Amino acid sequence: MSGSPIIQNGKFVGAVTHVLVNNPTEGYAVFGDIMLKQMKNTN
Image 1 (tube, rainbow, N blue to C red):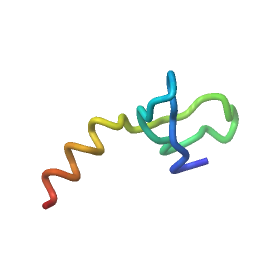
Image 2 (tube, rainbow, N blue to C red):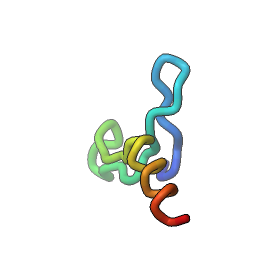
Image 3 (cartoon, one colour):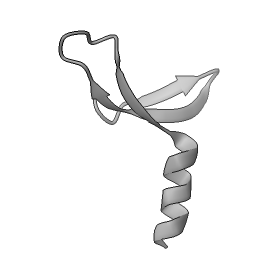
Image 4 (cartoon, rainbow, N blue to C red):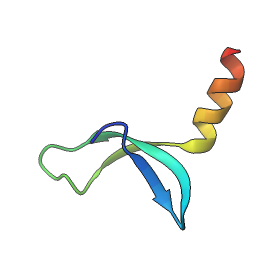
């Protein structure tokens, strides 16, 4: 589901942005470091 966190080795690494309707095992995500950089640029 969109917005769901992606956890690897117990650490937050990103979030789901899109899942393909025809194949729910594939989709797109945004990396956590990109989200942090964007947050710093908006303040």
